[in-house]
Length: 432
Image (cartoon, rainbow, N blue to C red; front, side, top):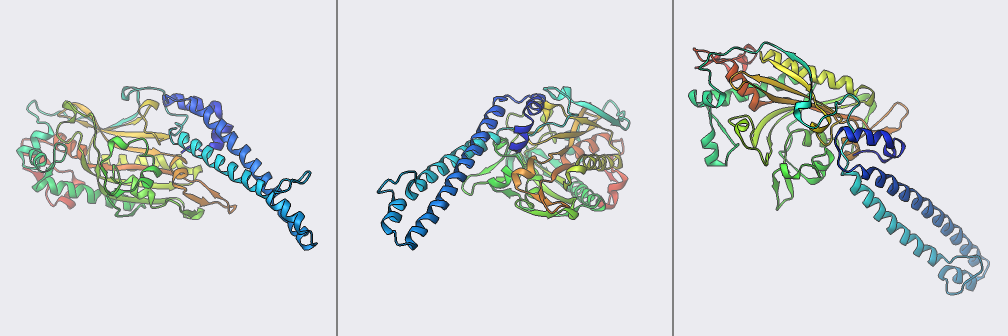
């Protein structure tokens, strides 16, 4: 959530950056500023009323002690009007009315603030669609497959790795069943990604797969993405769309020590996404699922170092792709393709040789103070004052499209060659 003080002091810049993100309600900026003005003026008035109440209470006490009981009672109850003196009862009534007015204004301000997305970083390009994302770099040679090369969904059937129809029977489309070496490959990738994250200094956590509304709000999924999350109505819980939500919420309402930054966590979870409105050839096989596994890396960083941290997190993900031998590219997302809470996002895509298209396998984002403000997550700086840290996260990595490109790009007449780094985890070199 944006900080009101920043909006108030940087109105033109806020409007400019929101325009990059194609925000459709720029009028909220002026409304927030006006409501903030009302909040501050009401608070000042309430402080004056409180001062009057204190002075009047002191006067009543002095009159009581001097034996002027009737005069004291008149000032206290207001039954008798005294020149130049407002009764304590009237002051209390004014205070009550103004407090209720303040609460209403603050609630209206809050409701407008939560509708505003994070401001994009100055490096974020303008644009409306994924086609306008900026290609930062491309790495690796695209494999040349024979003409009879198969897409991963046919390879999965040929080698009895994944049963899509069985998943439909058990649950529905988008819930595949992994079998035999397909299941072992899944587990191998998870363990490899976790091990690499731990080598990079991330501490593993195992977190719940359902979260409450406060957690969804804290990381910005609510109120932005209700329609994309599965909701358990009776218990008012949401199935997690990513481990980012529970892992980051570990630190909700926490004050960290400045010297403990950065905080680095990683975790593997299944992820659940309704993917409402998804259809067509691009969602075949593993291209888009309602349930999939992912290893997530999360950092809480000092504001002065968060963009350096973002680059290091991007390099970590790129290193995984390089070790797997997958050609990939890195995109800087344009304003119109960015998430609600993100200030800057890099997407990593691998080249699917059989489908002849790029598949997104990771997003790495810096949220600056947007999440920490919602989470009421702070750290104590060198001066002893509390300050909002920056939060970051990234997929390291999401499994389905990694599996898809591994199967497709490594297919040979002999079978499917397993990348060398995975063999200690799979215990086999070939799928044949």
